[in-house]
Amino acid sequence: MKLRHLLQTLALLGAASSAGAQEGGIIHDAEYYVLKKQNAAVWAENDAKVDQMLAEFRDRNGGKPPNIFYILIDDMGFGDMGMPEMNAIRGYSTPNINDLADESMRFARMYTEPSCTPSRVAFMTGRQPHRNGMGDTAVDISGFGLADEEVTLAEVLKSVGYNTSHVGKWHMGDIQESWPTYQGFDYAAFPIHQQGQLAIFNKDAAKEEITMAIGEENYNSKYTLDGWFRPDPGHMITGLEATIGSEVREVHMEPGEEWTQQKYNEMNIRYQAQALEQLRDLAGKEEPFFLQYWPLVPLSTTRTTQEAFTTPNGGTFVESMEELDEWIGVILDEVEALGLEDNTLIVLMGDNGHFTKYAPGSGFSPLVFRGGKADTSEGGVRVDAFARLPSLIEGGSIVSDIIHIADLFTSIARMADATDAIPRDRIIDGVDQTSLMMLGDTNGRRDHVMIYSINSLKAVVKEHIKLNVPAKGENAIVAKFFNLFRDPREETSVSTEIGAWGGHEFNRIIARHLKFKKMYPDLPPAYGRPYQGIANLRPETVAAVDAFVAKRDISPD
Figure 1 (cartoon, rainbow, N blue to C red):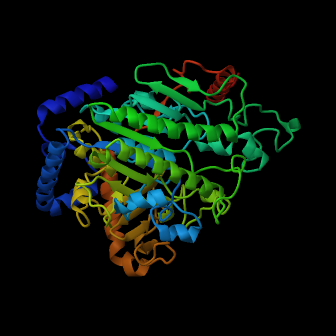
Figure 2: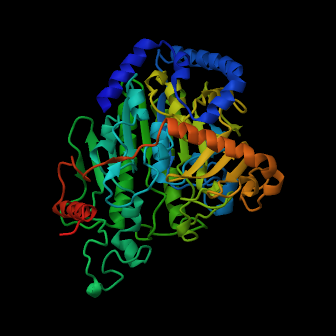
């Protein structure tokens, strides 16, 4: 439980005096050690440089490590923000994000997980979600979530004195122990589910047949026998607010009230305002802060809140993306007005590829890479990502080393002087990439990515070569290999050119990975009664949970 992790953290803090001294204690996946055996001397030299740079930063910053401001944008594929030329191809513009990108380090090979929940779990825990049962993406009432035993970045940073706030999408479970204020955040304002409920399953969307048969808007129920089959989005919990140690409450929904596109729009406006409020509040405190803002937009599916097309593209997601870019501009202006520019790490990125199910009406479709959300092709797991921290990270730079979203967990912990709080009893997939961030291109510590779909290993990237993992019993020598530099859309397999030698090498990579999984077995998520711990459940919500539990526990009479 959390007490155990607190005691472990205190013990580690007493046992070591520097992040470097504890690095060997963090357990990584097998390929990390293959690289370490060959690069240990160079890594040690670079660690010394990074330690010196961080020490000098703290000296300039009143003895404090940097603030952390993490902005995660939903369903944005590579090339959709930060590049005005790509904007022009799409027929819209993200000028504020483009300006941030120009001032930042651009990660040209940032990998995520294929969909929302797993990417967010990987960032928060430094662990790929197959390890903790969080690889699936639930939309409605589900009764599972991120386990209390997982150690989040918020908890790691709190152990060294950071104030922590979360605003916006969370999507890591509908049970109490999985919510932000039970996972290390002092304050949280968030929807308990995600846009499947909030933007796609609402009745406005049903009338436009963006979703089908959730109510009598688009079908006749005279043959319906199972009244529990179709979810009512208004009966589920929508938005919650809480502070650590206090009751959790649903906000802006009254008993009997319907959920609409207008309420979804109001929720997004509210989260923007709350992100600004939290930024101002945290900036006024003595301690460093960790603020994450995870907007729900640009995912928006109806025209009910759009008065006019504002872009040549005219897509529903695109229209919202331009609005979100304006909001990001307001936030960046506030960062400057508060005097936070020089001591705050800002990371802005997407969580996975496009929601291609809604192309072309959304305005987004695969661009540079093939595929999108839920795919293990590059279009599903390659995103734009930018990091800005003047004096430590070179603005206007591009790095082509492979980096995974889980690496941010370990790297941010290192920058915050909190590495000792990372648990040592489990595999941490995130590797420390501060050398890449602070020393630049070719200083990365990852040359591979294991790409999972829920609990199944689907692809392995090593250098610029990608293997689509063959089915059990099939020979990897003739499996599908792709050269990602020559063929970023993965359309022409080079099995003959690579398979003869690469098949065996990739088999060994997978075998080493599976060996480590046996040493540190994957765990299930936490299970429980949905919504338990919310102080003001509406009657219809209680009925919806009762129906879910009845179906889950069904047995012969």
